[in-house]
Length: 346
Length: 279
Picture 1 (spheres, rainbow over the protein chains, first blue to last red):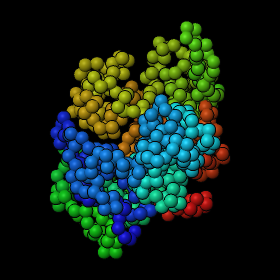
Picture 2: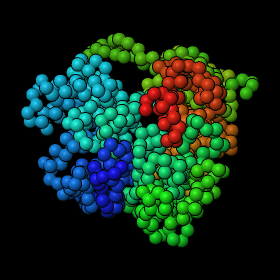
Picture 3: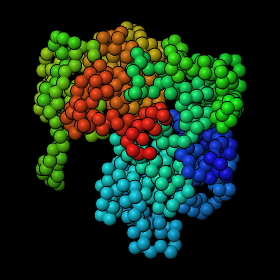
Picture 4: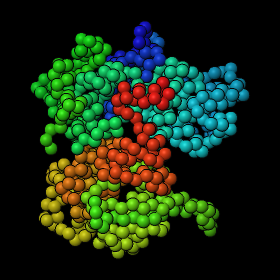
């Protein structure tokens, strides 16, 4: 965690013009990714986590998008990079894996041909035979059995888990420095999910591949992440190390989410602790803290937006957006001895 | 837990034919979605049906309610055989048997107002009409945590969690005895899931409902169920009290399923990975 960050996102803002008005999908997001680190970005739909990831590699550029801030990859600014440069960054320096591998592959071409094409598009000198050899190696390395034969399969001939492995192989084809995985296991069965998470973990451990993992699932986060960024309604509301977020959560939304999880390793509670209400519409955000309407601890000052600040002397890299003092939070987050959010009466 | 079960399913089979041919369809194979399944559900309890995609759990839920015609086997509701009943013969039974669907975006007619959607079963079964119907629907809206003022709104004006509440209000409108809930929370945001799970639990207590809760998430299933049946490749591979199935699984597939569930606790997740020799 020392030295220059691999990727530095500073005050990133992404706004879209929609029929209903301007939507600030990402509102001042900053974080860093260190070499070899797995950073999880957690949030619900509309939190801005996918837009953040897509903006990093220039996929949100369009006529109705306004993008501000800075994204630096080893010092190279990507926000104002041209299309050609971004094309090179994608693939060569940043690999991307999406939720649904069925839509990421072209259904009418063989898996291998698509990986070969990706390699040759970026490596001018690569012969077809070499690229094919490399593709087989890649498929084998992500755990696809009988890769020399399976390379000629079509995407539909692969199961969901195998397609996701092939997608990861393609993302790794040009040995990127960063892998961005956007809900890579959400569409998969839980037994397959465990295999894909183990693969991502192995790639990180063996190759030191820095990874941004975007997910809504805190169980997935606990299994693979080193650090966590929690987003809500376009803003980062808390960030810290994995253990800081899970064992000393500082924002009521974070501890509310942690409290509402079903835990197989615990006794079943009578009722699941719940967060009331729903995430706000980005067209109609509350003034100040966006979580305020759902927060049972809300008080007068919450109508003023708290900064994303370090509030713990012992953990300067643990940041959160909540006005309460750490002592106050540690007391308030306990519901019947467990971390959770007291739900207001229905 | 004694006495005649509310629901008794015996050797239920649902096969889908795989057809090929241009002019004359030939059945070349069968997909055995549900392949000889038996279970019972006592009044007032929740049976969780857990399995992965393709396990047949959703097909089973639909075949139980006769939304899909079973290929063979028996479904007895309050002792009466309902498998293979005609739509007309099923109609009076629809008051007793209801369903909550996974996708609250696809299961509500977008052109109808919420009041019409929830009131439709009451109207079709001639339970209420006019002002009485309206009052009944407004009462249902309140009961599921919405407001009576929502009566004239359209589904698109609601969030996913609120839409699922509308779907639940429709399902309980006729005071059914049995509800099959097919993945009722899996399309919802994490912060909303607990709300819907708790709502279903409250309604069960208030209305004495019996649930068959179909889901892939064994954590949620364990929380809501008295008993759990684990499905794999069209069959129930293990069935028993929820705690027993989760803590002392007997079947190899159940064990595999449980071992794959992520633990939302970094220290315990690490300990498990180390125990499995992965880190």
